[in-house]
Image 1: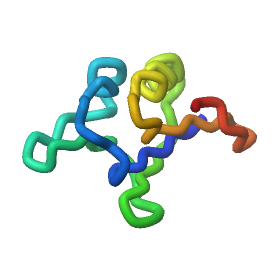
Image 2: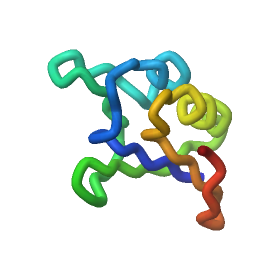
Image 3: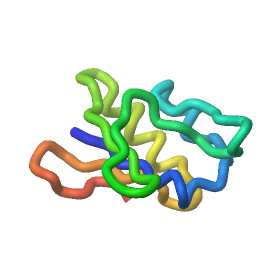
Image 4: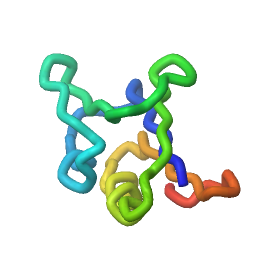
Length: 81
C-alpha cells in the first residue's frame, strides 16, 4: 500500500497528524509534512505504508477535509478518497 500527499492542496487543519504519526505539523508553513516520503512532482509526496499501519494511513486520508491524501493498494488501485 502507498500513500500520496498533495502538500499544495493541504490547508493545515492537521487532522491527519492525529490519525497517523507519519504526518507531522509544520507550524512555519501551516501545512502537514509526510515523513520519510519522496517528492515525485511539485508538492506531491509519496511513501509506502509500513505493514501494520494501513488502518492509520486510511484514517489519515479520510480525515483530510480537502482530500489532499490518496491511498492506493498494492495493485495501484485508488482506495481513498
